[in-house]
Amino acid sequence: MTPAGTLRREIGHLSGELESLWAMVKLSVCEAKETGVPGVGASAVKLYYTDLYQKITELGLRLPGLLGGVIDDVVLPGLSEQRHAVLAGGLAVLHACFNVLAIEKMQVF
Image 1 (cartoon, rainbow, N blue to C red):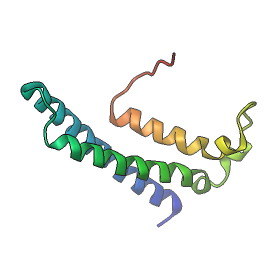
Image 2: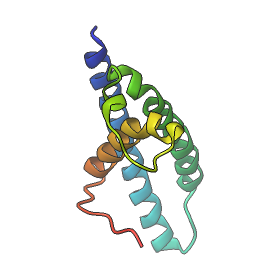
Image 3: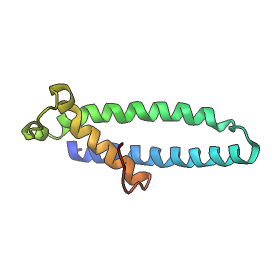
Image 4: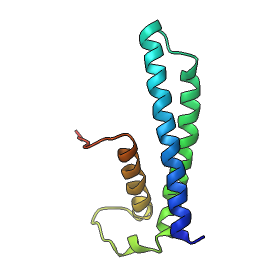
């Protein structure tokens, strides 16, 4: 499989996991609303989130290498080398999260 195909497959898996996590969060919130306390699934949601966060972070760190150094051509004044190296991966992961969670915009204060 080509690197692009492998990347698409991995992002597809992560997207599916994000959708599952979102369903678990909604269920946990509904249970808490009905009973006044978080359901037993709340702990599973926390563990699942931690595991998924780790997978997304690892993909984000590998992504610039998979893109063939394209990000190296971008110059952003004031951005450290360390942050520059993970910028593309971070943006790709953020974009995927926005799509899965149907977030249309983000406001930063």
